[in-house]
Length: 585
Image (cartoon, rainbow, N blue to C red):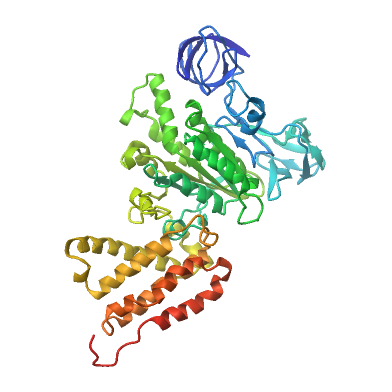
């Protein structure tokens, strides 16, 4: 143990002396209360420490202690279903200790130390194991099988291993070298966990949200950002994605968000039902809460804590979705700490290394072949919300995120104010993953899925051009084909892209139903096109089939396959028949 003393205090940054031999990123305990902090700068004998708690009341001369190790998260059974703060303190345990507000210096074990877990071996005495190999499993809740991995720096022949109930403090196996294999391991949060190789990803993250799955899909192992101004629905969109995505494990990081929004997440998630299993959603979810009224320094750590937990479950061969809300608050914490260190500021006061930190975070996403003999594959999908001031997408955090993320889901305040949710602007958003996902959509959904999607996008782009003309000369000046296109575009916008998060049927839409809905809209569009010129458009616009299209999203998902063919028959039967030859058009 190395011990020094406080020599200077500047907000959450404390300067200490007497800590000979300490390294950058080492964890320290500051003051008589033992506040947790991290070394971020060393100048001669002066060490700058970023304290993760409120420094009010600290005095110069109070002790600073360290065991010269970096900040490590505890990885093992018991993570799922937990609620942590940014430095992996269990909030539910701390609430029992301190009440509604976290007292300074409060702490608790991140994993249950006395709970027995039933361990089932996957190897036997005499087997040779190395880093990443699975030595056994424990059942972590009713849905997830937690795989016990050989940690870094451990390898050899199994001397003893047996099935039974163990706590995380007890070894489940021993090697002939005498090394023990435990169910728990520690990992430095700023260091990406190793893998055998990174592989191309071609399986989409299915979210049940039509605008994401059909128009701007992201694969498992990809990355996406959701930028938008205040009130445009960033948090609601991320919560909907967290609820409905088909990832095996969900990690939600509330980084600097308002306390009432995070309270809603913490109270709602434990009561949500997993649509894939019917069990509580929290059985496969980890929540990390670092609200705007909590110490700013811990915001940066919360992001790295979340991605490290995601990589741990990825290494078991699971698909993990990480939702970070919001990376802008994380960047603001970087800016504040940089200012305290008197570093040279970059654009808009952010540190000059902002771009590299953002890239470092998003690059930890991906689909990989995990370490271990079985060459299992796992993925981490990162979806980060961005909160640009005033909705300005040219500000540094949004622009630097754009350079890294493969999908851009731009929120539009005008859509949100008009009650169109999700308020994703279909003209400015994009995805770079369509080519990678083409084979999956062709095989698993339909051969013409992406063709229909492309036609819809072209209709909406053409609508945008026509609306500018309408503003100048009025709708009546348009040709009948253009009037039809405007009405079909409205149907796409209001009945396909708009989705109710609170409707029991419309909240989740399977990929097959999305395809059928596209086919229904475009089939009716083509049917009407074929009769233009033989029938006045006013009669086409008055057809009851338009109302059929508006109601199809409420057809129960399990019944849609059978209803679809009957729906098509009604749509085509309802289209006007061609007029006799020579009739007036």
